[in-house]
Image (cartoon, rainbow, N blue to C red; front, top):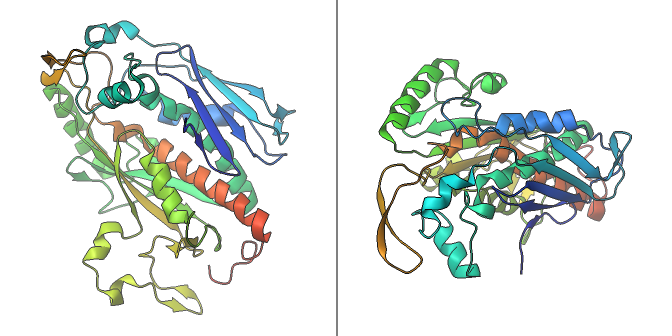
Amino acid sequence: MGSNTFGKLFSVTTFGESHGPAIGCVIDGCPPGVPIIADEIEAELTRRATGRSRHTSQRKEEDAVEILSGVFEGVSTGTPIALLVRNTDARSKDYSKIASQFRPGHADWTYHKKYGIRDYRGGGRSSARETTMRVAAGAIARRYLRDRLNIEIRGWLAQLGPLRTDDVKCDLSIVDDNPFFCPDPDKVEALEQYMDNLRKSGDSVGARVNVNATNVPAGLGEPVYGKLDADIATAMMSINAVKGVEIGAGFDSVSQPGTVHRDEITPEGFLSNHAGGVLGGISSGQTVHASVAFKPTSSLRLPGQTIDAEGNSVEIVTTGRHDPCVGIRATPIVEAMLALVLMDHYLRQRAQCGDVGIISPVIK
């Protein structure tokens, strides 16, 4: 049983491996008449791409999108949209020395135990290269949500290792002006220095990425199974290296008294948003907010212990081109997954209830 499809009414199936000839996706359920522009999709892929700075993997893919179906005269036809991106800068030989070894912290061991075979070239299907197609599909969803509902989705790097980036300033208009997606320009130099030292040490570090969706109407989501926040958590946890997801106040709600955590309501609207824009699994009309934790990169040039395919103890050193912090370029991926969730739930709501509560929500 394969699980390579995300979404119910707006469904995205991805395919391909990190070092295969190409990666791609099929989007089913996209309404007709949506502008599908290759340049817009590629602009989002450029934001996600490796090689944006010296702090990320130097694998430099062209990420040129081929639109194979579902688009006529620049707009969607309502039929399945097939997108393809060819791999042009894979170096499979970098992994030949560890073909029979299991990298600690990677999916090598679990893929081998599940399938009895694994693609050792960059992790194959478990590589973050797969997220390219999530971003491509997300670009289409974002265009529809923006045009139809004026929904804007913006993410940012909230923390890199011990360094918090949004505790003083959080200007989301400048996150694309630096390679970290940092919302505080005064923090960029410290991030640069931290990453330079980290790269020299050969180690890696984790990161936190936050994301907001504004102008989300009330009414999206199901009350029990299919809750909006549950599907957001599922979407984020499906991203490579993600180990934690918070909605709204998240784990801070553990120490908050109820008088603080509850979001009181007035005729003018809510007084706070600790719930992250979701109540009872349904959007409240407030900003939807999620926070996503990424683990440190496991591919390290520092020696470590592992076993080989025969079960022998061996020392492993992972060569090749790897991100010392995968969270640095994860912001576009997190944004894309939130867009896919909101797109799918909007189509579900429209199918069940029409535009009740969507065109004119009671509380904004």
